[in-house]
Length: 188
Ligand SMILES: [Fe+2]
Image 1 (tube, rainbow, N blue to C red):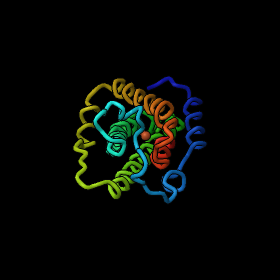
Image 2 (cartoon, rainbow, N blue to C red):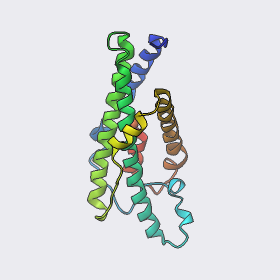
Image 3 (tube, protein in one colour):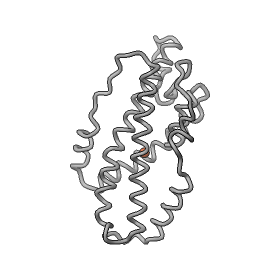
């Protein structure tokens, strides 16, 4: 059982209540994706290196890569949430503040997966047919969850940190991005 003080979990609960957001009211707000916009920023697509592509083709690449980027987040959240729920077991009959903090974390991750399913469908409505995302989240989760808890938690921390870096260094500064795509990653 962990020796983390209850107050640290209480702080997590307060922070998660403060930044709570709703998929429709805060993120989507009745908008749709527009193929005139880029989805994934140049800093992540490295579009400038596609020297033989026209600007229109580079934008199309950014839309395909943006769709896959979103799907990969939906995929990793499957194992993140499974691990958090597993760790809840340590607290169900113990520190109830810690339990609440973890249940809230899990609830958020379920919401993120719902958000990514929504935008996958919305991108599918505007992009041409024929796109595949061939990874099965459950199979990836099973492989990851076969490793030690600390390895899974470190991988999760790394994902959380690079997500913020991607947003701050590449997504936020790119002025040609879909504002809807930007907001998905601002809130997420
Ligand atoms: Fe998430």
